[in-house]
Length: 119
Image 1 (tube, rainbow, N blue to C red):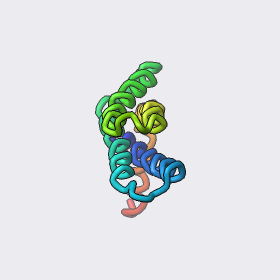
Image 2: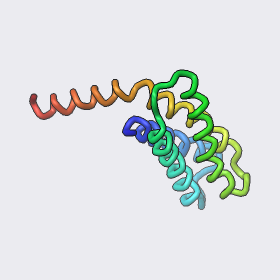
Image 3: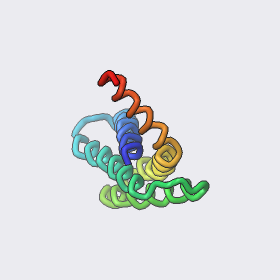
């Protein structure tokens, strides 16, 4: 779950920067906030489903990315197909990272905490 949320947060930042680059920041604050929230929500939803299952990870990630991004896409009245498509791709990325690297990231984080605490 932590890995999926972290990956969703990183992709939210990338998505925000991409949107600002495409459209600018003028009067788009709530839209950008909604876009970032959508990516974090995607990380949460995929984190709830993440497990190691080979190619199923890619299909599940794309499907969940599509479902979460579709809610945002519908609310924009189909005005941002790039963000919708990116959401599907981000779903695959989040699920792939969460399924493959979660144990490595968690163990690395635990070792770092132990070093900081002096154990």
